[in-house]
Image 1: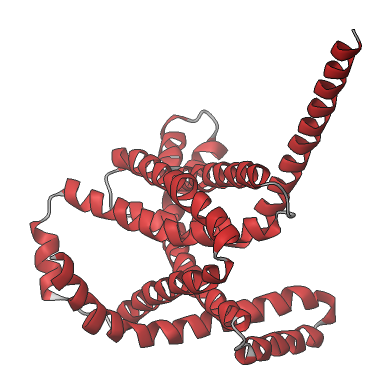
Image 2 (image 1 turned 135 degrees about the vertical axis):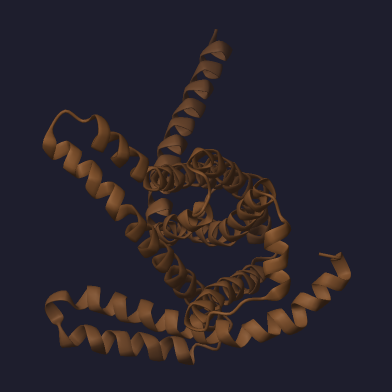
Length: 318
């Protein structure tokens, strides 16, 4: 009888620990998700451009496939990789993130360069003309998932850093919760954004109240401008996040002069308007990170297109 009571007491203790762990996981997931909020906003702003130009009936299926790719990025690749690197080779995390930051700077700078100096690439245009819509859609999805991978890597790294040191399984479950919550939030918002014009069209045609029909017409008229704004914000977000990743990585590696200088400039700008000092400081720092990202990206364009691209083409045939 005493053995049974001891066993029950052990079971109760284990259940209490498990319940506490679940509470800790939920709290850590919420904290980690909030820490990664900035990159989440970037992810939401970047994604809609990948469905721009597609037929309306293909928008939601494409978003769904990108969302599945994002979940796969986070849960199948990045989660175990982040945990393994954190345990076995933590010093490799910063250089890998900096490579991702370079890619974001390159992609953002390339879009800025093309908008300021529009030009046609004969090979690209010919390739574009020969591809059927299904092939182009597949390329858009692949490009979106590739960009998502880098943003997701930053999200998962920030989330892991925000989790208090705990058992490996607790960290794994917490990261999985963060990944699922963030992916659902980002792609749910993206789906709503890209279908807003269809919602507006339905309201304009079928709503009973004049005010609701007017709202629908306003949505239809305003959505192209909103999509342009989101594409612009998405490009700026790539440069900001990419630049901040590189600057933070340099600081971690012991080359923090530029990062400290930007911090001091932002702090000085915040002191000019103390009533909104924190907001001004954040805006100035983000802007300077973005300017740095743009400059780095412009330097990387010829390296990527004249050196890395041809080498990659010879090795892979793509």
